[in-house]
Image 1 (spheres, rainbow, N blue to C red):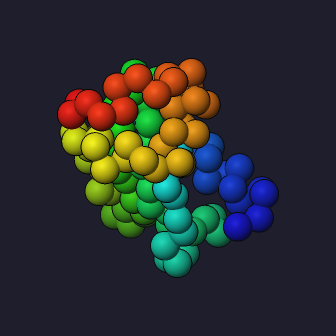
Image 2: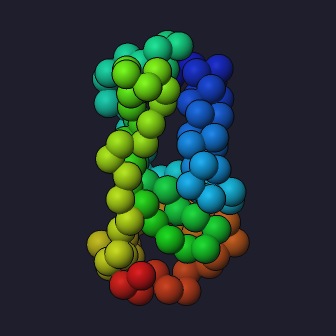
Image 3: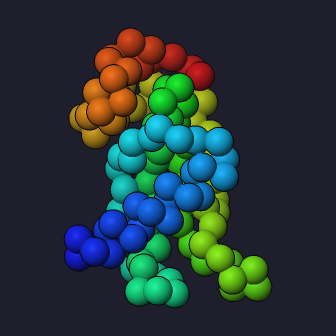
Length: 107
């Protein structure tokens, strides 16, 4: 993904997350899904760590009838134990200043 497209995708995600009340966030374990969306954006899946330490899984997609980008599915990850040893999750926690406390919590 080019730097311009990456920036556009991040802007779309920022707007969609703001609609859900999420201002501070870090993405981790993201991957392109190979589906072209309007505007030359590629679908993306992964996880969002919020400034409050919550983790959500998502898939960036396009809602044709509504004519807008959506996060679907969108789900809360309650059991974080599978992330305890994941370096991307730890990087996201550091990025948000959360440290490593609460990594084993069940949310």
